[in-house]
Image (tube, rainbow, N blue to C red; front, side, top):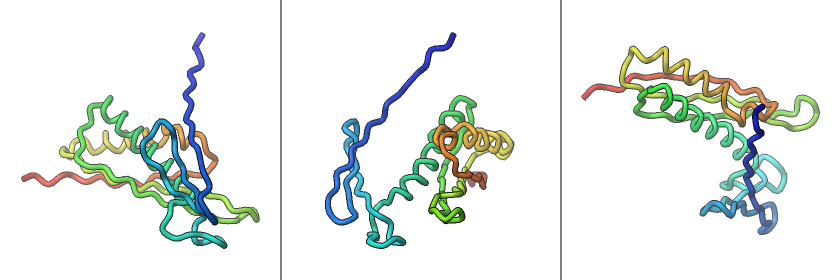
Length: 150
């Protein structure tokens, strides 16, 4: 019989003014200013929005899942960036982020590891616990490059 494992992640949000708040966790040092995105009435430019944080959650979960699987699989890589784009639409009459496209760019040293790297990228997208927790469609469009030899 398996034992249920639970983890708790607390955050605290304090309203500052207008449509702006400050997000923190007592377990972390940094705070994040959040606001309504500028596309909506009263929105504020230049501040993280809940929509940005939602897309960032998927992107950062993909990265941490990939690095764990790559380490376990002994895949060496030089660089990983994970651009992500979230599409918000009101197809049902209510706004929702209906799609997130992850476009990871992975640089590896060995061309012979390209297939393995692609499998690990795909596995990371499937294993990401944030992706498994949402109804938004997540698409993976990876690029793998071989590092230039000096």
